[in-house]
Amino acid sequence: MISFALSMALVGVYFVGCASKPTYKVEVKEVLIPIKCNLELPQKPKEDGSFKSHKELAIYYRQVEQIAKDCTKE
Image (cartoon, rainbow, N blue to C red; front, side, top):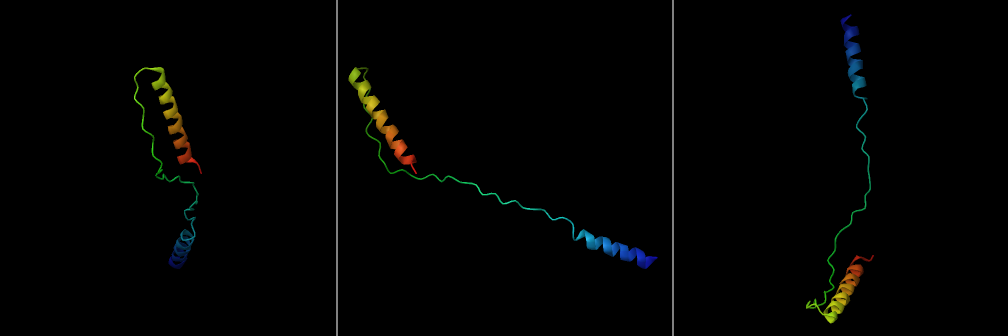
């Protein structure tokens, strides 16, 4: 009787070793790495309320937007 109980305990320990092991899922993600843009910004024009200064500011913002687009192109 003792040998039967001992053999059953041994078989139980044997099957515990075959229990399901944790599975690992490998997931590949795209990581964006920031890079420094070496383009220089133009000098910002002064705002004095005149039509000419508004026009110069519009040109400035258009240039800055183009620089930002050039820096983010792939």
